[in-house]
Length: 503
Image 1: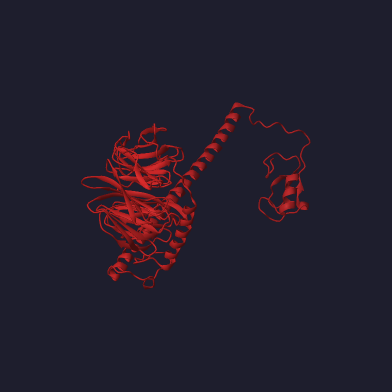
Image 2: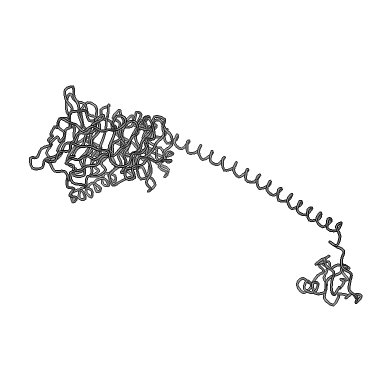
């Protein structure tokens, strides 16, 4: 006799007249108090209806369970069957979960493909729309009120001049930056009489990441190096070490890299030899503006969402990287070799290979000045940090030289070099100019007392011990007395830091 609820022999057995089942009195009373029905057939049942069973007063014999080997084996078999059944149920549940996960992953993959296709269609629509606006205007400017947008910045305007709002924004930034740089008193720490005749490698030197690079870009304290296979590594000037940049995908067409403001956050802007501009690898900028290799991409010094781009053919444009709108574009002579943006952010100097520097005012999209040096070739141009010097690196059939233009007086001074210069670097005071040749560094310093430029490496340019030909460089430290530290980049992807001093 066993209780229908607990399965154990009852101490005080009672029987239910509704189902005829036997229960432990205490258990059935608790059940009836809570549910008021028979637990077997759920018919209404009260405590008064329970019938107590009279049992014999003698002690019941001990159950034979587990008293013998057969009963023990039987119990173990029952436990094994129970475990096997539970394992089967768990395996079935795992199989069902795997099927659900597989279905979810399939749906996710399909959603990613649909999103990718939608982004591609959006970019194609933008390109088609811009081609349409250009063809309608027949190369002339389109006034903003002539074109409507859908609110998602899908229309890019090509205008002969920036809007009044943009022009005023650049003007205000120009005034603020002018006040800042005018208040700064950057002092040159190299005495005019101190010779700078020694150059030594300093710091650690890590193994270079690639055999050859096709592009190098300097952004702040980082040097972006793009290999001939399309991979990009970054050299950190402070830590003197290389690291990978996963934000830049493999691309053999990369020609220049910089950082801009996109959606109010710092983003990577990549310019390609095909003329494409891409933000964070997935957002196109200036669709169909450039058809040739980009030479320079210049973010505004303070308005980081405004960026000036120019390609080899002389086509230039100003873009807003937040709204993805091309604010204006124009055309200069071809064979562009470099460009530099003024420290106050209103002017851009563009150098062509024929010896002409064109100065563009971003507030009006006008060439406000042309500085010509006949029978010579330009290789680089750079505004001085002081704001009133413009430096160009030239070469001719008979000589190599740099020209320092004083924009206040509309005059220039020529400093003869021993070797052809490819890049120009200045210190913060603008009184030291470093020119980088294939394997040498030459230094010119401004003599404030004599109001003239002096070449400090007259007949003996500093020989740089670095693997490969020099392609770029950046000032690291000019705070120490009679000592300058540069980081120099070679076409073999080697970046080394050098100290220039008098011994």
